[in-house]
Image (cartoon, rainbow, N blue to C red; front, side):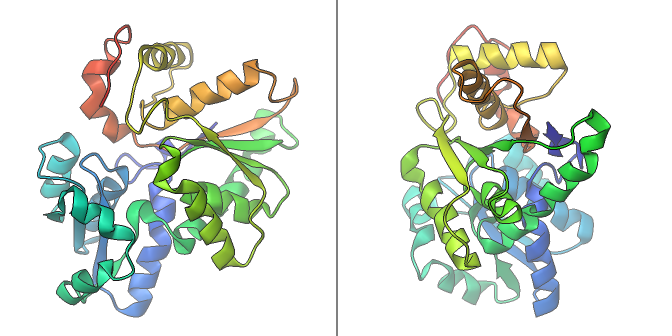
Length: 287
């Protein structure tokens, strides 16, 4: 397991890897800071706001839905992020070609970053993960590995691993969102923009009925995994991906002895909003 949750207490998981290239581009282009999108529990906006406070640059968040009071939103406000609530219709317009026009006119000094740090820049920021794993293989007695496994929302990290592997090792992305969220198309577009073949990865459905949907089996598995391995998980991404890996392994998807690198993508701050459900794994909860 690649423990990206341990790299920083606030700018955690894969979020920093996706943000770093955009911060570099902002510096090179003379932009003062970043503006991006996310929900009321967004790990991406949480990392962006934390980075803005730590490195003293302005950050603006465009949020899905109506104003909410969540642990994440309170952090964003405490760290000085300027928030704009778009409603649900306004947020759905984020993929329209002219979406950023008005916001760039309002904040001409900020660099716009897609939802979740998506795009080719964000994917390229995740490419060094391959070298990080290879540099540590000898520490666990592995000469090599056979595949990657990770949760996917926008698919940006998965696309970065596909680019890094260049067909050498397959990347398995367990979808934490339904198919209509467009993850497959986003990965394909990133690879096309990079000028590489749209191959080398597999998408598996792991959302268990919907994004942020939890059930008794998932919560019980999460509690068992944490107890057995002292491994902190959260129920929207990492727990779903790890449960999917167990299910596929038990079904014989991987040959006995296969060595799979599971990427812990962080996001533990988002667990605060679901803690009551996590503490009672015997009951089902739907969000």
